[in-house]
Length: 427
Image (cartoon, rainbow, N blue to C red; front, side):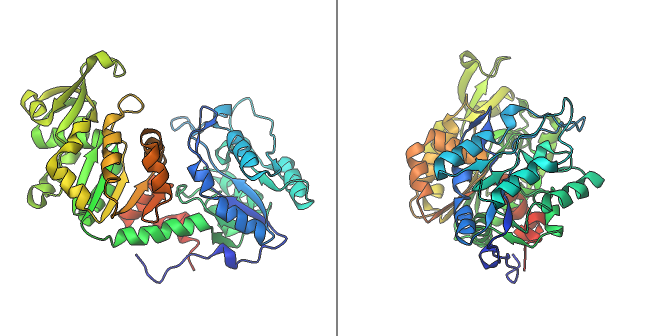
């Protein structure tokens, strides 16, 4: 990592009496409910500091993926509203928070912030509100646009305030509310963003032995991070379709749900590991042999040896919990000095045992520095091991990264400053 590069600290900015646009990553709403408030709680220090310095915060986040990838059309659904986040903050902080109400177009996204946002900010300046929280940024046509709508939205958004603070480590893609708004306003990094970038510095130079655990539903999207982690770690544990593709390539298995392309892509990793032997295989698998993956009557725990002998397998939807009772694997994890986990091992919520066994074993190791990355990982850790989750959240040796994709991209690049929204905030 470029040691000379540092983030511009919002605490050094002159914000008294100014409206401060704050980009947060409160993408924690599913089906109209806050599923895990951690990412909201993690931004509260930044909000408190802005208030103490006399700034007036206008918050913004995305929720979900309202834009259809194929058609490009924006679908505005109440289940992707920020309203549950606003209610959480109202109750948590006892503040008057304004959520501007827009007329929802019959088709497509909202074309402009218009007078609705301006009126809300005027109310903030006059003391009517303690805070303004804009609607889901991805409901606006310009947020993810690549045409003139993008620049128009950036100018319109920046006109609401005098200072921009980015506290959304997990929102690493260069959209208007994370990146292009910085062209028009003095821009700084919030407390959470700074903390996570500093944690990445520790991860780039880990205490050894270093064990990395990564899982995912698509092999092709994770090739870069897998290779970077393979180079950085002393041991690597795989899960999900990534592990299935690896097993398929190594033992020439046909596993339902693993494409020939993924299997072919995994051959390179198999070849690399023949010499170095860094990948720790999980000896238990959970197979579903029926057409309905949720039907537990078709669920079978099998050994890796059995899978290798049979060659033709149904869908492998989890690793057996007993995998983490293996003496060699336990020894490696319990003696590790650094552990990185970006992994849900099974298909949630139906196959939780592999994830539960993994998280429990990781937290048997009290000495290691631990880095857990991504909303799904944190949510499953909290659901499956609530006691360990609470201890971990208070443990100075544990870092929760709010963005799994951001961490993996930064690991692949070797620096967080290659992420545009972060790089633009460097001094």
